Image (cartoon, rainbow, N blue to C red; front, side, top):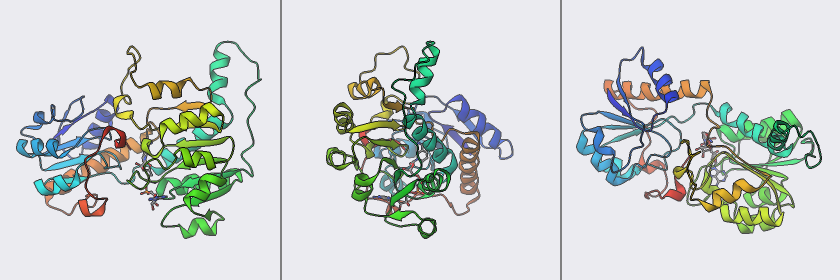
Length: 347
Ligand code: NAD
C-alpha cells in the first residue's frame, strides 16, 4: 500500500524498511507530525502511519479522507490522540500495535525505580566531576518495602512480579480486572486510594481515561506516605504536575521518575538543546535533585521497534488483502468520543 509515515525518525525508518523487505509496501517517510497543515501531503496515499503525539482530530481525518486515505496505522498502543468516532464516520480504519513489548516498558520502569531510589542519576553526575563523596546518596533496600502498582495489564503485571519475586517487596495493586495469577503469587488487590496511601513507591500502568486523569493529585499526595516515590511510564496526565511540584517542594514526595509528561507533545522526541523551553512547570521539575525525567523512551528497545514495524505492516497487508483487521480500534470499544487536547495527548 502507498503509505506516508508521519513523524518518522531514523530508527522508525530502519525498522519499518527492514520489516517491509518481504512485504513490498510503498513507504514514504516524512519527519513532521500529522496535523491540519501537513495532512494534505497525504494526497494519493492509501494509508498514513502515525505515532503517539500526532494529532488525528476530526478535521485531520476529514483532510486525510479527501486525500484518499483509507487506513490510519498507529505505530503504538495508545489511541487517545485519534478521534475514533470521526474515523468511523469517514470510513477510515484505525489500527494499532496493542502489545509490542511489555518487557521493554516494565524493565525500564524497574530501572527508573532503582535509579531514583539509589540516586544513581546523581552519582553519575558527581563522578563525572571527580566528586566521589557519598553524602546525600543514601538509598534504601527494596526488600520488604511496599510497592503499589496501579493497572496490572501487560506491563503492570510484569512490574508487579519483578518487585514481588525479584526483590521481595510487598506489592499492592489496583485494577478493575484483577489478575488471578498475580493474586496466587501473593500480590494483594486493594482500592486505588489504598494503593496511593499505603505504598512507599507507586508505579502507574493504567490507561489515561477521563476517570484516571490526575489520579495522582493534591489530595492523593496529601494522604500518601511521607517520602513516597512516584514513577510514571504510562501517560503524563495521570499525574497533576503542579500538585507533584508542590509535593516535592514540601518534601512530602521523596522522588519522582517520569518517562511521560502531561505536556510532552510540545517537547519530547525532538532535540531542543539550543531552544529556550517555555514550559515553566517542566523546567521546575528538572530543578529537583530527586526528579528523574526521560523523554518517553521506555518502549525503545530493538525488540519493540521490530515488533511495532512487523505488526503495523502486517495490518496494512491484511487491509490490502481484504482480511479482518485484528488490531483495529473502534469507537465503541472506548470512552465517549472526545477530541484530545495537549494535556491528554501522549502514550
Ligand atoms: P493494558 O491494557 O495491558 O493494561 C492496562 C490495565 O489498566 C488493564 O489491566 C486495565 O484493566 C487497567 N485499568 C484500567 N482502568 C484502570 C483504573 N482506573 N485503575 C487501575 N487500573 C486500571 O496496557 P499496557 O500495555 O500494560 O500499557 C499500560 C500503559 O503504558 C498504557 O497507558 C500505555 O499507553 C503505556 N505505555 C507506555 C509506553 C512508554 O514508552 N512509556 C510504552 C507502551 C505503553
